[in-house]
Image 1 (tube, helix red, strand yellow):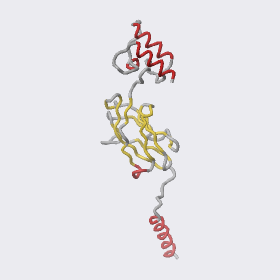
Image 2 (cartoon, rainbow, N blue to C red; image 1 turned 90 degrees about the vertical axis):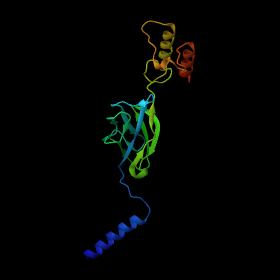
Image 3 (cartoon, helix red, strand yellow; image 1 turned 60 degrees about the vertical axis):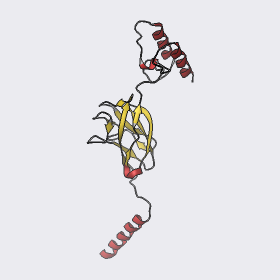
Image 4 (cartoon, rainbow, N blue to C red; image 1 turned 30 degrees about the horizontal axis):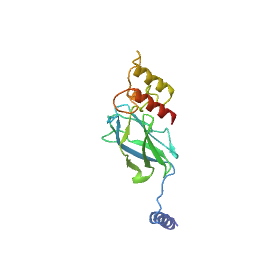
Length: 180
């Protein structure tokens, strides 16, 4: 009897292995690692990396993570991003809450993915006050900067056309950006 049970279990395992259909846990982990920059420089210690998407559990243990080494995660003893979710889910990667446009497939590469480099800009052209929203407030701020009003210093976002000069063209460019 005992020998028959062992034979049946062995046969089941053999069928599963030879069927070609992978067997996954319904809620498993995927490990993502890579490099991250902000404005072309290695992201500083304290930068937050996260993975989100349909079928992805967020937040979860080690998602998000905080960089402990400038510019990388999951290398040389640093934490990888451990994303929990369902097989086949698309993981969207974020840096400091900003979507990077980089995605990876949950469950590919045996659960490990070297993500494309995550690159973000700390400002949006035309976003003078840095709130990541283009609106009438930004237009007014650029007008005040161009007019030389006291208490309105130039910010990276004020150069809406990115020609390294803040002038009336940036006002027009921001107006167009707000209108779209």
